[in-house]
Length: 301
Image: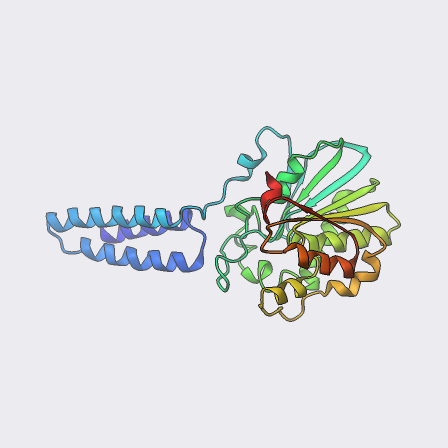
């Protein structure tokens, strides 16, 4: 009986929480609870059931705020055509609109890549998908596209392909991972013009590379970022964390980026990418800086 409840408890915690260390803590709790049920007498059984229930609700409470709302809950009544790109391991959404008026492509931020400074998340899907929210709010009439980041919005059936957490952590800005995302963006935008590429937070890295790729094709393109991580090495230095080996340096693309019309929005109280840092980076890669009210995720409001 204890084993059955232990298995049930593990399944529940796995479905409820997404962080690696939390699950290990839950397993320890579950084992302790199961031991109570092995004593055999009725009172021990009742105490065990109570302990299991208490453990579940305690751990459920510990997961509060860590859950991810389903994609459908964010989309609401919007008609979006979704597809999963196996090569890049990401989800793309076509929100419709008049192709003749051009395409606006929104690229999501890093999401819940880490649950703390050093612990990777099991699922990088953002709890507040700012990029998606901006895309859904677009009323300009042209075609609107949305691109998540690798392994976001993966769903249960995608977890096997997304088993390597380095894809959304220490390797997220290496050429191989970035290149697959740029390829998806170019393909999804098709041959429409003009093209506007919008990147939120870490999505600004991909947005810049996509804009450069469009420019090299001779396409009419402009770039917009919100709380943009324009130069990861500078943002990491600001937060006093090391930059992983092999990451692309956006300063290498500065000459190309300065030839692209770009606007960088940053929240006045943004602690992730502060206004002063945005101005410093924009002075290198080019573009106008616009300071707005709010913090790093307030663009979704």
